[in-house]
Amino acid sequence: MEAKLHFLGAAQNVTGSSHLLEANGSRILVDCGLYQEREFKSRNWEPFAVPPEKIDAVLLTHAHLDHCGLLPKLVNEGFNGKIYCNAATAQIAKIILLDSAKIQQEDAKHKRKRHERQGRKGPFPEVPLYTIKDAERCFSLFSPIKYREAVNLGKGLEATFYDAGHVLGSSIIRAKIRNEQERIVIFSGDIGRPDRPIVCDPSVFETADYVLIESTYGNRVHEKTEDVKKQIANVINNTIAAGGNIVIPSFALERSQEVLYYINELILEGTIPRLKIFLDSPMASRITKVFENHPELFDKEMNEFVRKNHSLFDLPGLEMTADAEASKAINNIKGTSIIIAGSGMCTGGRIKHHLVHNIERAECTIMFVGYQAAGTLGRRIVNGEKKVRILGQQYDVNANVAKINGFSAHADRNELLAWLKKLESPPRKIFVVHGESKSAKSFGDYIKQETGWQVSVPAYQDEVKLD
Image (cartoon, rainbow, N blue to C red; front, top):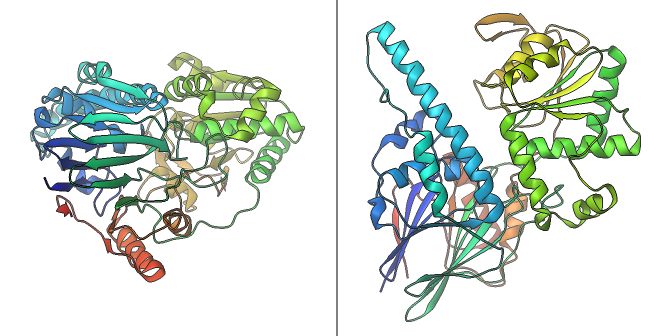
């Protein structure tokens, strides 16, 4: 019986990750992600390419929204199978899906009001893509599994999850298809970089017939950076000397925890003094508790740190703010504070309020620790604009702006190729996915040039037979 792959998302684009494996009469969906690029958002509203009730199982690589964000819609429209993933991924995905559902509902409400004022409809429905109740209906379907624990999917199909080194609980999935012969298909998910703090290095493989590999940074090499800790220490100490605050826009999953990791080390080493630190993100605070519950996923250095210091997140002066009142109260604190808040690109959330109170103060620093997409408030600040619009008002950018390189959780072109080259024999084909068209095609050409292997860069909704 033939096997097929359908590329239903993240094909020559970065978000909406979704791949369907059909084999031996079964349909297995690998990831079910939300589209986040403006030009592709309408796909979130389209019917699934395969009726959800005819999908036997979902294999989830990790909990980022572009990999799990359409699960509530899938379930709402008829899927009732198991969602297999690492236990930490299951816990984090529940937090992220509830937050996403809340945003979907709020966006629909605001859109209705705006369209009523303007007397128009569209372009998307004035109802939420899914609700909090829809998100909660997913939860009973999560089936947590351990790394390297084979899952029997029936009909000669098996899946095993391995550490991807991207974020806590992230997985590379190896699927086995057994009929007349055995074939191995590897789904990379998002591959992390070696020697990152907290999480382990990405798992590598000796054999595979087919590999789907991400290409987010497939056309570039990460800048060589000086020591990240040294950069952070310089920013903090200089800002303390000036008498201002350090405001850090940060993502709730992994980035906020990495920042806390470095700050904790710097305090313990005496490189920076003890000071007030606010993690002003309810979602980041909840995710941080998941980290504390899964020390088995930490790398060697992190486990040694925990052995010596008990907890990464029990650092002096750290306060996790729960409600809006506590968040507002931060602005009344005298002296220097570190304020870590979402969103990472300053597109919403509590960070905007902290920018309002600090961006015009020359003694303060806005410290960016992640990529800032074109068109975002964060990108405008990083690019050096002297005036920016925040919450409907114009503000002068008088604060210092610092960009800390070296925080990327995605492997670059050379690191991705090095991961592929661990294969001891050429696979039948490499499929390059999860990258902008230019990045994916560039990386595909690079693989061919360096290895001579067969490479394909599938387009949206392409279908291929696995010989």
